[in-house]
Image (cartoon, rainbow, N blue to C red; front, side, top):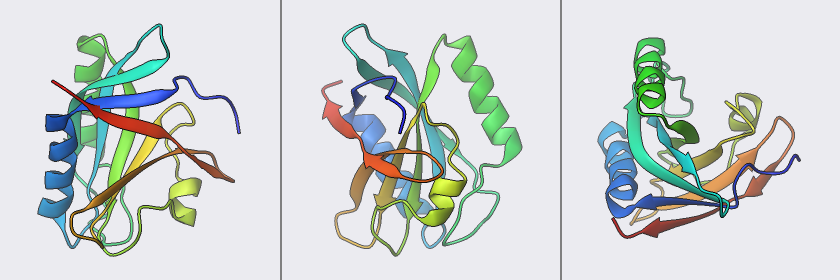
Length: 145
């Protein structure tokens, strides 16, 4: 697996709670979205904005970002001078571990993949670096702000 573009992904409590809310609101279907921000010189990926996307698959076991919502998010991210640092989605009934489909459909090896599991209460979030063959857990933390 290639080296990561940053060591740790950080985001605010509001971004964290927004991901959980999105996952719960879409249940029993999977949700999906993007986190955008900057990579600081100290190797920290600082996610500043959350972009919830529509799940065109409308499935409880798969997600596919709807093209218009994805394009709109990407355009705004560029206009804000940010970059995509993470893709998030939910697993409504399974653990927050990447599925074979998650590995095969990985958006980029340059972003963290966050998975929100709704199979526990409270929901559980885990982060992963993915490529087509393997996954490696990524470090993340919620920061003030």
